[in-house]
Image (cartoon, rainbow, N blue to C red; front, side, top):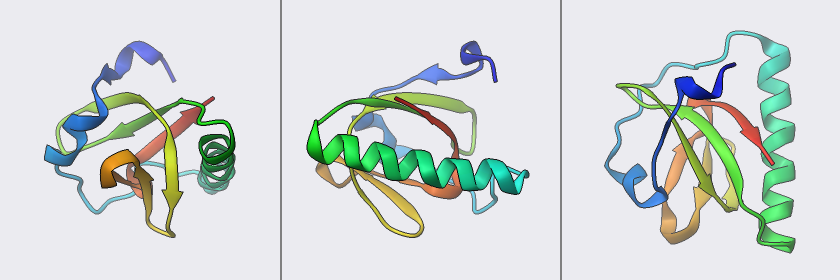
Length: 95
């Protein structure tokens, strides 16, 4: 994955985005890896308040946000101020 494919956006802009229902990853190993990355990001966010990069895709383009993960559900990543990103729209997470 080439980082230049992703447009940098601010966390506050995510609330206005539209997310399709389709999964962005096709490889089951990549989906498992994403889950492990998210669990690690949650731990780092809650213990160290570390920011991570989330590479995701809305209905128009690929984006990246530098943020702290505050919570996880089985379907969503929860960021500060209740901002959420659907897990099925996330390509990867980088610490």
